[in-house]
Length: 197
Image (cartoon, rainbow, N blue to C red):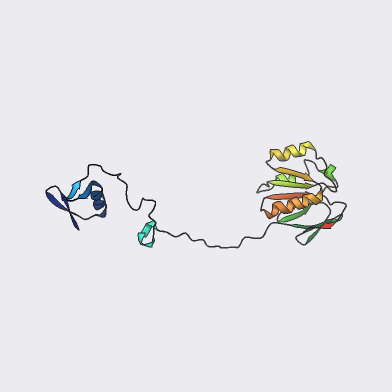
């Protein structure tokens, strides 16, 4: 409890907030506390100033943020380790012939050459959930033109398409997969073989 003078009378104060308000309206002088002619802003609480930092003693206003890791993130998605005229090595799985890489699945893709890439053969890619962001098409030993109807269909479904020769398509797929993008690939084996790093 404290006593605060108000002109001639004294009254008791039980609350810290009232004491703070009294400090705002009164200032010290040689004659005691006088009513201040210039009142400072009403919100000069130490809790609202930028210099004040909350600490454990500030009760409810102080809460620490904690993070619990329930499960470690899995590694990057599927990676193409090598390719040959016969097929691909994807994460240690040998796949013969053209394939559709839809992480985590690897499927045989029923196309013989880039001419067989049609709206029907692309249904597999645009019916997936969650929807893929990028589809990388490897057309064999060199980059070939794909039917514009196929590209228009995929664009209408919100899927970006990268058409490249298979060696570059494998590298692009690995890069996008390592960035944790939602990516799929349709790959036709190239006439040469190599091992990717």
